[in-house]
Length: 261
Image 1 (tube, rainbow, N blue to C red):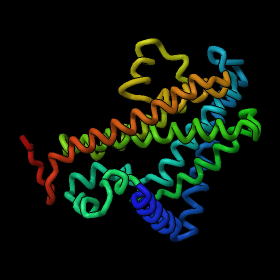
Image 2 (cartoon, one colour; image 1 turned 90 degrees about the vertical axis):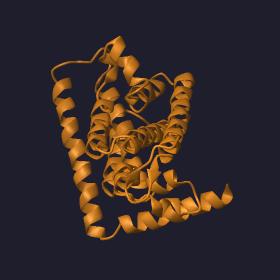
Image 3 (cartoon, rainbow, N blue to C red; image 1 turned 120 degrees about the horizontal axis):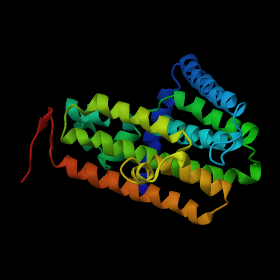
């Protein structure tokens, strides 16, 4: 276990170093994402200037939601940007590189790339939390715990979708669209959705564990709901690991898919 941790840290360190080269491009990508998030939130500022709340949620609550989603997505892209490449690596037959490493190929894939734009999301989160969301530094440990657990759900869900390429080679573009849809839905106040849709958001498309439930846990200071978010992180990470291993039985180098019986 200690050896695996050291290997992952070494891999992460190398990819983060590569992600900051060139530095100007990194700063531009992060700055653009920061500005993009602020522009997106102006829509909510305009909305709340005309309406007082959305089923009990006020502007502060939406700012808290935006901060949680920004941190979870930003952290995922900055540290685990390789999750976006899993389908392409499978289809191109490039998984051999990761299979040859002295660790399981899934974490090797996930931590194989750093996307600098994620830094812009992470910086935005602090603005949303403490300037617009009414949070204080005493809330920070719980905020970071919930947002980081949400990041695990985000990465794990995307790994599951990307792993579908073991069975469906045309998943590359669809997986990217699912990622974008997850971000969009997570950043919307999901408490206003109907019962059937909420069931979906708590199961096959678990954006509720990225946005809605973490916000409710923080608003209500609910340890039970906080444990629900942490439990979801464990469950979806385990599910991603299991599905990837299942699909790995079908993989052969050189982009050949073999069904093992």
